[in-house]
Amino acid sequence: MATDLTDIAHADRILASLSRRHYFTDRRVQPKRAGEAGQSGQVEQARLAYQYHPLFRSFLLARAKESLPETQLQHVQRRAADLLTEAGSLEDTVPLLCTLEDWDQFADVIRAQGATLVAQGRTLTLQDWLSRLPSDMIEQDGWFQFWQGMCVLPFGPVQSRVHFEQALGLFKSRHDANGVFQAWCSVVATFLYGWGNFAPLEEWIAEAVLDHNRLTDVPQYNFVSLWAALLQGDLPLAAQHAETASI
Image (tube, rainbow, N blue to C red):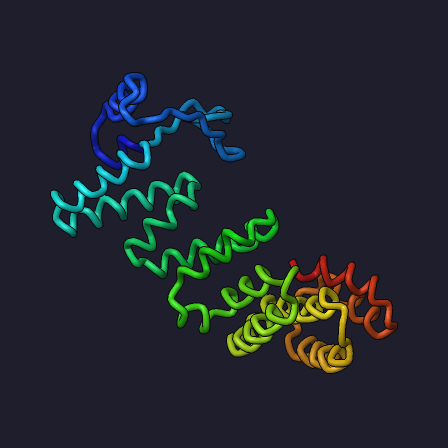
């Protein structure tokens, strides 16, 4: 990656020398992503990475801003962001995209990784990423509203319901059947997490029937089981189906 970024063929040897001589450079071994193959075609288990000391890094960044033309600096940052994205180092990519104010590419990263971050329980990371986006982008994107709701669902079900309802409206306007279904399931889940007033569920069940009849390509998932459990008043069973259907 260092060679690709700098066009210096022996960049790896320079970094190794800095690390060996303790010049504010640490060498670390990082695990490769699952299924990633090296030049030999064999799947490798680890790769070397170098990291500057934070103070040294700050010094180098300050010097770069002083000595490089803005367009050249942005070109280097853009290239670094692309290389990091290709390597799967998304948490290192995000600060660069924010510095470049490349909100479209940043939004693509969130759309691609949102479900994975939630599945891994990394909702704080997802919430931090969403907070960096311009507010108008979040307000106009159903999935951003949906992910905001998922981030606060476990401890703020009423607050998350607002996001899910907004996401549902956006998905309907764009005829996004999968989004409609997931947002509806998540609205139902907010009542189950809150375990308070269940009276509004009747209205949501009626809306689900309308959406199901109108959007014939809505994924089935656990729709029938969830709907039946709610009608029967079997809320524990409904919670089980809602948890599966909303992810």
